[in-house]
Structures are given as C-alpha cells and as structure tokens.
Length: 268
Image (tube, rainbow, N blue to C red; front, side, top):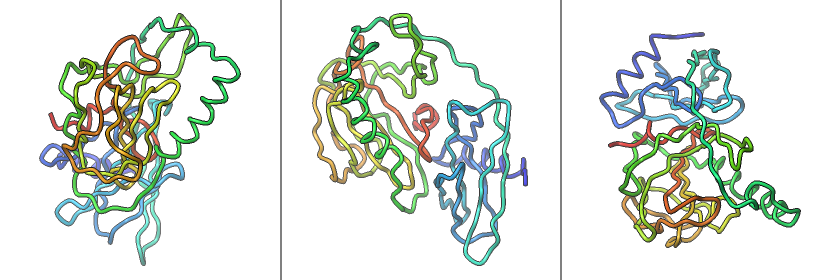
C-alpha cells in the first residue's frame, strides 16, 4: 500500500528529532512511519533496512540507490511477529546531479592487470564491510562531523577522470590539511581498515543495522579492525593517499548497502 500520510508524519518527526528528514530521491533517504506493530523487520530489494525506536514508535530509514529510476517508486516489505507481511510503496523524486572533471595519474584510469587483480580483491573486502548487518537497537542516527573544514556538495556528481566517465561520487569531500584529526561521528565498531588502491588509507565503521560510515585518503589509521569506538574517538588523520588531487577527507555513509548523501545525516 502507498501511504503518503506515513511519509509526511515521518518527515515531521524527523524535523523534531535527531533523525534524517524524508528525502526521497536517488542517493537520498526515505523515512517511513510503521504504526501498530511489534519491532518490525523491513526489507528493500532483498536487503534489510534500519528501523528506529522513537518514543515507542517505529520508523524505517531506507537508503535509496543512486541508480534508482526517478521519477518512480520503491517498495518496502514490512513484517513483524504474529502479523502478515505488508508492503509500503513510496515515490522517488527526480534529483539531477552535476558533472565533475578531474585529472589524475593515468594508473588510476587505466590500471594494469596486476593492479586490477588488487582492485578486485580489495573490492570484495570493502563491499563486505559496506553491506554488513549487525543487529542493534537505535533511537537516532544523527552524526557529528568527523572533521572540521569546508564541505563540498560533491555527492552524486557524475565523474570524469582524464576525460573518461566513471561511477558517480558516493561521498562528501571535506577540505582539511594533512594531519588533521578525524573523529568517529557516532559509536560503532571498526569492521575494515587498509591501504586500498583507489581509496588510499581507509577506515570503515559499522554503527549497527546496516548503517555504515567510510573514511578515505588518510595519512594515518589510528584504530584496528574489531575495535569498538565511541563518538569523538580519534580514528585517523587526513591525508592524500589513493586517487586524489590533494589532501582531504572523503566521508561516505551507507544504509541497507547503498550510499546516501552524508549531508542528510550530519547534525550541523
């Protein structure tokens, strides 16, 4: 069933609480109110979605893929103990992203066979961390900024490296000098660290229920895989490693295995 009222109620609740506003476009976040149920399980395209307990009411928080057709619709499957499953269909609005043209070392545009082997191996590690599901009870997913600095509006940009098209930009670039401390924006568990071909020195943190944050191009990594970190913990330092044109932090956020605009989740 489609329920515009549910979406409007969720958007109103999001304004008053530390949760994202309903932003139903590719790369955005859908916030759906789930009334009258025990703790529900919500799935979208076969992936579990995050649910929040807000003052005794359940809200589903769903990441919308950048490649989702718009305008269009998506369907969430909602189930709970002792109740039949039901569908909530919600509309996806158009949101046009601009282009970005960058010049980088040729090896990042046309990797050789040995480099490709490394890239594919690293992709498996990264994808596993970005799609990990760890059950947790959450009442808010608002994030503090991991580092101070000018924030670009680069999420979703259609990128061209040395004139060749590549996948859209799936994060926010925050300008900062090399060595600037990066802090965990929310409690979580470090699920992957490494020096990756494109991302450089990288940290991935699992905040629970498929809510994941990613930090790339670091000069230093100050945490270890499996380590639990509290909000405000220094996890690393800004750098210029991997495919970059200068020092900055690439900060990305994921819900139900899909990248969403971090600007929608930052508290300030």
